Image (spheres, helix red, strand yellow):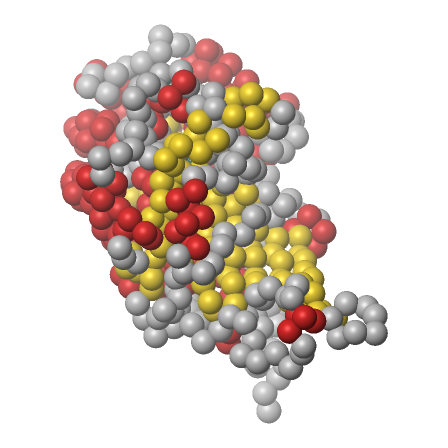
Length: 513
Ligand code: BG6
């Protein structure tokens, strides 16, 4: 006789209960690029937050490697300031004191053999005094052009090799190349030193609770999956809008642009989560296999001059403040043709999604900061109402709000109170803030912990990275071949006119989130 829970054991009684907190075993982390913004704003605070939550081993060690002429005390001060300014959880002196004992700093440049030898000695000393057990992760928060030299140095100095039951892992920040060819070259160089199962490529969107929740919504419920296909879905809109500009980021961003910065990784991963088939389990192999499979089915809609759009922000008003255009931002080439807005149209060539466009857009200095996945359903095949009664009825939609105001909304039609059968759109809302008392960890907390635990599910494999470049490369080539640069759009708007036109051609329009 089937039981309500399908005959499964009660998880409360299951001795293999997976909900117990996962605590990293003895280990250390070395960060290259420790003086950068990412390290200060995200990595160091995340490490403190993990320590504060009791998820790091007692002897955890954090080593910074950089050119700065710092003593370990100076590095300690930098970490302290970063923690005080950016940590998510409250400051506790005893947690900080314990963490501070495990801080080390090694000064040197990437081509300096002696500095890497010193790093090797430091790591060995940590094994002895902190009990890190020979287990170390190397976090490359550095430009991709420096990956080869750092990987070679790690190999030369003996840092990359693991022995018996110790491990060595490398964590790589995006951008992972600037096109398919360069990504393949980088993968080859990294894999020469670290086997694929020791390589953790960060896409921090996968560390976000709301992104993982796409899988829960789809595969833990009976409600959505039956209609999650071309029979019911009209199209999908994936938006990642930011209100910030690029002041201070010229070194990284000029010549890279929005498509490489965000579509190649975050947005194609969101598409993969939205469109993939159910994995047979949530083991990393199965999950990544399904994502890879769906990415292989993704094709760009053609012709590209009608199905893509790009723009560059111009000066304007945002939040009551006058802001400069990209070309006036410090450090940018005044002739820069770097796009700060990009939109593309993808199709997923399989039975589930045939004919359903997936519109992806991202931009800086847009109306407001919001990331969402909106699944827009087809209209009912027949409406047994007077046409005038359904004038305010739109298409049903399921909107997954990745950030901010994390949650999900369903939009559907409902009768307006009164004597007439008038139907209008209403929404039903789920918000993390109301539904749960726990606050969400930062993406980097989850991902750093997963590296230390050797849990690779939320890290794209090289096949996914290369496939994503393969999808995007034709767009980049197409844009590069055009005589004109990106269209301008005023700061604070929702992008260039060409973006609205891209959807209007198929009779659709972007949501105004
Ligand atoms: C990074 C991009 O990957 O994501 C940045 O390089 C962008 O340009 C950032 O600002 C946005 O991250 P989040 O988590 O604030 O949405």
